[in-house]
Amino acid sequence: MTIQRVELGGVSRTAPMSAAPSPRADTPNTAFSATLTQAIQRARQLKFSAHALERMRQRGIVLSPDELAQLETAVDTAASKGARETLVLMKREAFIVSVPNRTVITAARCNETEDTVFTNIDSAIVLSQVNTTEANETMEQDRPPTGEVLMPWNDRNGI
Image (cartoon, rainbow, N blue to C red; front, side, top):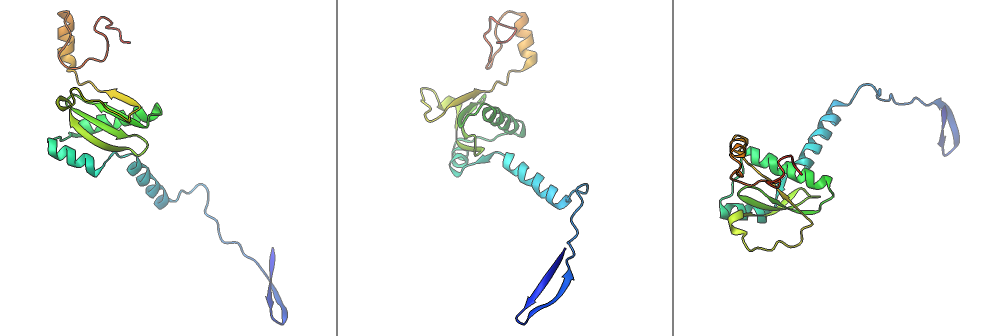
């Protein structure tokens, strides 16, 4: 392909156009890949609003890494079901989460939520932290284990 350079006095000369070398498709741009991976990881991280952080501070709520991972998994589950605002009940805490924004809006202790009505939510996730050893021992004794159980006791094969 050739291009012509036009000057006020007319066409001065014709010069071949050289194309800039294009990056090869089989060599990934590692800087871009790393940046994209970091952005995806940041987007997947759970955020806490200032209000939620204040409530957690006031109520002495501290999440262990395992509990945080459990909360993140619950948000992933809610997102896969199309939830927008969900209540996540853990063993001791309750969280309201904006699922599309992956942001915890508020937090409370479960013992503070008795006789409480949660509004503006479209889903609820109840997480159970039953000790499996205790559950197995008490099932042999034909009584429910302590803690929260998600399946009806008369249906040990699940729901």
